[in-house]
Image (cartoon, rainbow, N blue to C red; front, side):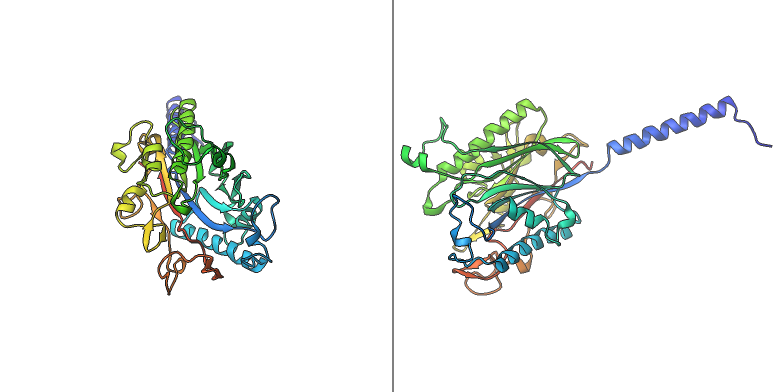
Length: 366
């Protein structure tokens, strides 16, 4: 004969069920989330077609680089190979990957659909900018991890009351450079904003004032976001054409070397200590530099326990990673051991990029 449940035993079972339900809910709320966030200068990822109004003629089949479809496909394959290699090292794709020196959305679509990385399911945030050569910045992101809420293209301007510019009025009117991309959304349910920049070049030994102005534009917009969305976590990334110890990064972006020194309104820059320790993401005239920089605001550097925060990932003390494998470096000759680029001395050599990619990791693991 089946026994009937007594009132006491029934209430005990209900209490146990409630405890299990609350426990499962708490587990879900505290589920460990870890994300890789990075940046990669793709070094002139041009297609083989002319974009009206852009000086892309050297990257045409009949241009100086004799940029054929075979060379273009090799370039796309190589960029995807590096992204795949980073995934194999981290066991996950970047949730968010900023890129620079891309000609248009078309080349990004070819990249994310390359069979090596198509399973990442990347989507694209990109605006066509005013750069004379036609190169832009963009953000690749996995929509199942990062939900985009807003995208902005921030144009360069000279509206600064702190910086004295070398260019005269005619020079300012003629100046064109890459816009800065801002993408805001939810990463792991938390509000984030990502800035992607490719600040003005060092060609001719000039541009320090221009790079400082670019950093100032980013910082001003980040201040506005932090005021509008209290607690927002911000990552600034890009090819800054400056080292993390230069004025643009330390003064105008308020970059700090040590987390303990970061105050509200400051940014933590993991690559200051890495540069001082001899690391580099690109080499020029025998010297290593780190122009490929990521910085995080105080809300991400000093996040509350249980929420997403930046963590050390190299030798348990460096918070940044400069990714490279032996096949990404030049094997011999004058440029031995520096990044293996697409062209060398005007000849197509089929390399990857003159920059190594960089990244950080954020997690809510306690």
